Figure 1 (cartoon, rainbow, N blue to C red):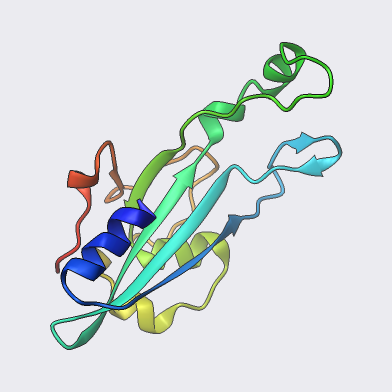
Figure 2 (figure 1 turned 135 degrees about the vertical axis):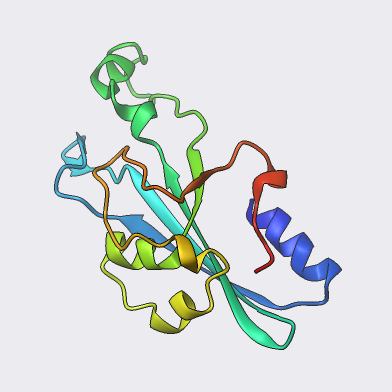
Length: 144
């Protein structure tokens, strides 16, 4: 996805900034004594038509680690269990700010999906109304 966004920026001669981090939740499962974040966020900021624009994304690996104990038991000693693809959503930046506890006020105002923001933080694996699950790059909303 990041490569696609960078290619899109290059095709339209735009610069972009990608901010990213984990969604830390006390309910995240432990693995080898360390809690493993189930979700990660990304916010992409760029200039579009002379104004600041932003899009937000949530990557969720909850379905992949729901049965982490079974995956660990089936993995040979000394090796890490395999992880598959994340579920990826395009989400309002306001929802990312709420979920991750961040102050992203200027980016919230510039969000291309801003009208869909709920301001609610769903439980891990949960999905808010207005979130777009991305099954291909064609699902991205890159214009307001």
